[in-house]
Length: 222
Image 1 (cartoon, rainbow, N blue to C red):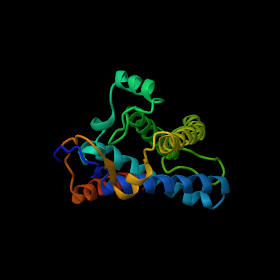
Image 2: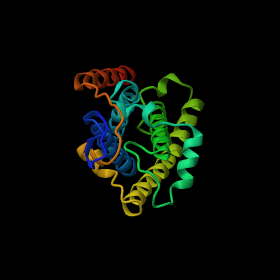
Image 3: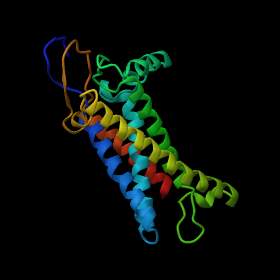
């Protein structure tokens, strides 16, 4: 894209990134509800976890080969820039960012890491009654118990990260008048000023990456 000083709608998040985001939100909700119900709902919980694992593997790969705004190198920055942004965050004139801001970029990394850990430990977890992950039989009972405890503890970590994420979205909407939800729905964001050159990755590439991610998880769980 070229450069402009006019305020206009600019394409930010591509379709694969948006689908990943909302599918992850929905499946995380399913996972929370089913684990609270227990019993036969744990089968749904397990398949929700398998699908989440495939989604995370897709997003990790898409963060390398996806459209420019979705690539990690676009929004994951060094500590100096993160600290500078945090110190300026409360100022009304603090700069807006077309993609994730420096704090938001690292929150994405933290969330992906926590959810990946949750899905991975779930493959080995067991409740010692009727539900166990497909890889539980490959580890000792002690290791299985350790990974199960980590799976349960990490669930609280994820809920805390989600709470921080929601609070940050509300803060930006109310205080900074920066709507972060709309662009994740429509893919576009109102923007004024210079625009970076971006590259949009084709949907066929996203389909290939998604198929590879799903195939990897299917191989693991079968």
